[in-house]
Structures are given as structure tokens and as C-alpha cells.
Amino acid sequence: MTRAASATVRRDSDSKARLRLWVRLLRATRMVEAQTRERFKQQFNVTMPRFDVMAALWRAPDGMLMSEISRFLLVSNGNVTGIVDRLVADGFVVRAQRNGDRRTSFVRLTARGRSAFAAMSAAHEGWIDRLLGGVTAREAEQLSAKLKAFRSDWESDA
Image (cartoon, rainbow, N blue to C red; front, side, top):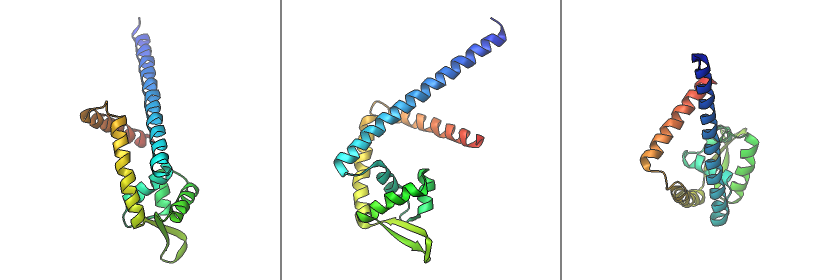
């Protein structure tokens, strides 16, 4: 086999291996997400998007602008608005205008929201721990580092 042909075979093999990795990552993600969605619904009567918004606000105790939540979660402002509306109705978050500007809404968790999120977060961590129980802490750290490096490499290409 020529050197060029050998390189082509290796690239094709590498490409197929990366494709298999992608499919496995996607399947694992979908399985874990499906399990957590169902558990959130059953145990807390909450959706994943609501949990995600509450998680973003948990990380910002002083609150966030609606646009900041959208950017953080990589979703449209419209999606966040509907979720926040329901969280306000349930008493989990409050919305206020920033400096009286009606165009910008500032959102933060209420005491009820912080308490509810703390319970959801603890349950979520336990579910993930059980679902990924076959992965050692060291393996999880290695995979996380590799995926973080991948993200950094990918973002620099954008």
C-alpha cells in the first residue's frame, strides 16, 4: 500500500471512530436527559427548562437580566420569557424592571424558589450519580477535561 493510500485509510478510520464517539455521546446524553426529565416531572412536577432557568438564577443570587439567561442557556428570549412567566406564577422567581426601564427585565429566585431548587438540585445530583455510577471519579474528571479542551478547540475555530 502506498503512503498516500495508508494515510487515507487512517483518516477514514479516524473519521469513523469519531463518528461512533459522537453517536455514543448523543445516545448517552439522550438517555440521561430522558431519565432526568421523567424524574423531574414525577417528583417535582417541573420541566427541565424550568430547572435550567432556576439553575442559572441559583448561580446568580442577585439575579440576571432575561437576555443574560437566554445567552447562558443558549435559547431564545422568547423561550425564556414563557418559562419565567410560569416560574413567576408559581412564586419561584420575581421579575423587576432594571432602573425603571420597561424593556429590560431582571429576574431572581424567591426564597421559595431557592428552597425548591435546593431540593431539586440535590435530587438531580443523586440521579446523575446513579446513572453514571459505572464511571469512576478519575474517569469523569478525565472525560470532563477532554470535553472542555474539545469545546475550547471548537470555539476557537468559530
